[in-house]
Length: 289
Ligand code: AMP
Ligand code: MN
Ligand code: MN
Ligand code: MN
Image 1 (cartoon, rainbow, N blue to C red):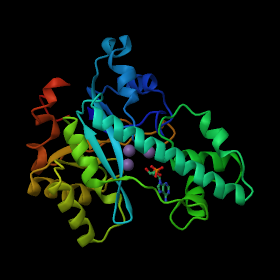
Image 2 (image 1 turned 90 degrees about the horizontal axis):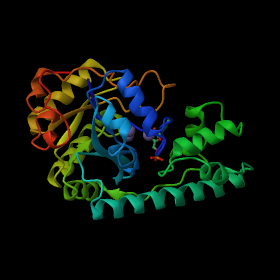
Image 3 (image 1 turned 30 degrees about the vertical axis):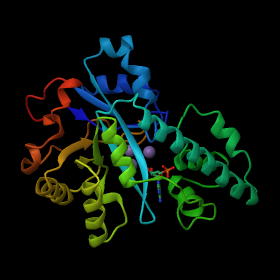
């Protein structure tokens, strides 16, 4: 089994990198990519560890970069990147700073609504990349929301009372930097954006024009029709097809590590494990996992 999209507590996942590795072993994964939001520290922590050496898992370096496009947040995965590359690290620092600034701006809005203590809560977290999911957890703890969905609809989503727009890099910049770091840029969970058909076409056009090379074709909770459509799109555009659960937490059992459908035959020839760079990080994949 191969899973190329997962999170640790260095972004908004709930497990430490070592706990994630344990879970991947338990689920018999061959290859795992940790793709924290705007952070590569999990890979740094694990890559030279005895725990990784003693496991049967090949760890692929990865990231999920937040980008702004047409008033939307688009997520670009960078797989097989050089995590030490300078431009990439500069971008990561900038995005993490912006995440913290946004949390501060949200905190000020929450204080006006009588909800105090967000930054104290955030500063005690192990994360490098603060996100709205952390704020949602805080709002639930503070009794201001009953659940995550409500935290977003009441406070954090675009129409929420404490919404603060994020100032991410552009899609083009994310793609260029992933390429500069030697990696493959993959458009994450393509059906999760609120875009019209022409809007999505424009996004994918721009993504490819700037050097995007991959499409996440199979992921959690994907209906079979959408999977087929994405497989066809990926094949038509000659993109590398990727697979990933987007695992965040054992509590989200609808997004478990490795629990993803097989790539449809139409795009299997261009499965990302056939990419020439794959062999620098992982063993060859002999049969469809
Ligand atoms: P951020 O990177 O801080 O902008 O947070 C983005 C994350 O927030 C997404 O990856 C989702 O997990 C979550 N999210 C965004 N919008 C919503 C929503 N309307 N309801 C629930 N979760 C959301
Ligand atoms: Mn997340
Ligand atoms: Mn995402
Ligand atoms: Mn993700």
